Amino acid sequence: MNKTHHIVFGGNMDGIMAAAIYLHNQVQSLDMYRLYPAFSFIRDNKFPNMVKSINLNKEKDILIITDCENHPECDLWVDHHFNDIMGNEPVINSKMSYNPNAKSSTRLMQNIKSEKASPKYSKAFIDTVEMIDGSEFESTKFIFTDTHPLMVLRAYLERSFTSDMIYGRVVEMMCNTHFNIKKAIYQLKIGIDCVNELRKEAESIQKEMLIIGDLSIVRQRKPNKFPRYSEFYVRPETRYSLRLTLINSERYHIQMGFNKWHNQSNEINIGSILSRIPYLIKGGGHYGVGGGIIEEKYIDNLLDDLSQIFYRKENFMEEEMEKTGVDKINDPIESKAEEMVKSGEAKSIHDGREKASQLKGKDQNGKKGI
Image (tube, rainbow, N blue to C red; front, side, top):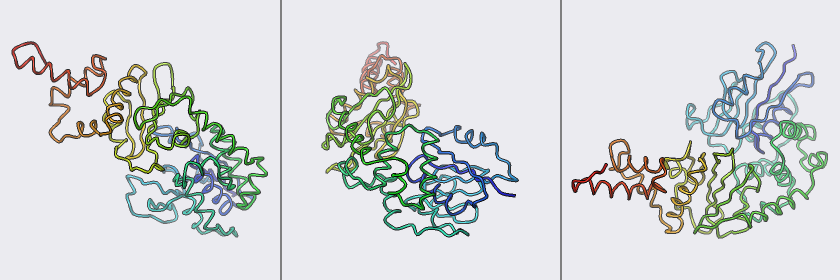
């Protein structure tokens, strides 16, 4: 009985190429296949629900997942992202190729044995995929001017809607042209004009930027209105960027990042800061990048708190919040400060602490306090 290969892949360059290699090397001519790009917004419970919607029949279906999280029903999982359950060490067997030390799922996928004749994946091809996936570009100018076929494809995908059909079509074309990227983008009718258009869109962010010290702030009404790294392209001296993207009438998605091409190093643990701001919803991230959700009524509070960092050029918030002697549950000043921020009585956590301290002082003098 011929199998149907259900290929779930990360919705990015690495995921596309890993899926295309699997399709080229492992799917036989009489087999069926279906492609499922998993974009970044498919997280938490959405990913298991996506897999469930495939309605797998174990007698005739094969589930392949690459460049995104694993699933219990998966027949083959190929990924290079760190997994809490799997840990730091590589695990290679018939069911998985997991290596958090690898730079791409593409590299892992091309090493899986195949009964079919496979093309020689050049070092330059793998290296370029990994450069794009890891944003290891030599400069922001390179991002918006380079016309290598894979960079042209990147520019096209950056400007396109996150459509299953588009990403599936790109996977198929990579496979059908045996990874002749120049031929593939020609047949997809993708030209270098994509790079020019991407650059123009990046330049248009200039009039939308509010600068506070080392921080650029941009509000946008839709995701990806401006290409990634636009702020750093038009103003290379900017060290940090903050984007506020409208979700609905009451909430915004926030994205914050460090300009890795800046001539000065990052001095702020972005993920730590965002995880500790009490009025953010699901705030957090990594040292150089982070995000979360914020209600519109707290945006001014956020800008006030961040201005303390970027105007004064010191990481006061992290120092305050990570004091070993501060216990948010048992410390009345810290608890009162958070209450004031949430009620709107204080503009920021810093302002709340000052007001709470004043109330504490009054209480010690025999007056009503906290």
